[in-house]
Length: 210
Picture 1 (tube, one colour):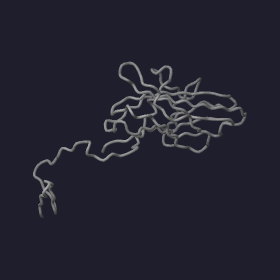
Picture 2: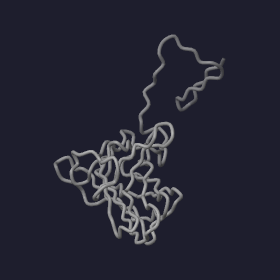
Picture 3: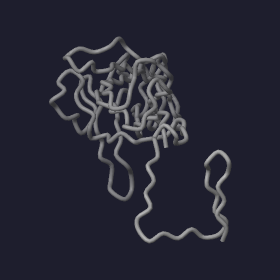
Picture 4: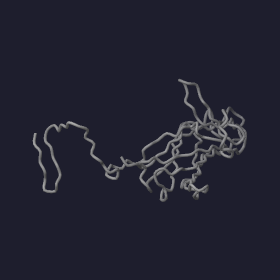
């Protein structure tokens, strides 16, 4: 085994480097590679009634609330769903949730929220969209302006599509809390079988260090 020290002070070892005690060099987090758009799943059970945040979502869509549908364990996964909106005309359903930016988030870098969304059984005969509003908590009982930079997107398909919403990141830092509300806007005037909007997951995508 050879040990070489270069003129600039760096150390190069050829062979196996052994050590008698713990070897834990301090590495500045800023020296770690940035990894872009890393995904973190948001627990659907943290979604709440949008205008009564202390209240859990109902077990099925009702009034203006999305329902937290548990599915059958081992068969179908939990999801957020509207009520059956066949021939219901224009109807909005909401849910509200909090998102904490991770400690290794790179301040001011990309933040997105992703929603795999679709329609069950039948599409709406007019429109079905998903929209997001997102505010940063200022930690003084106030919030920022709406940070969502993406307009409402269509979910009017029987195939799940990832709907990505860009969050304006300029003022964001690790540990910041985002107060988010989603709304499905479904307009159906047919008299056929059920028309139900479904959101299968919520994911945070952001740039992290290390």
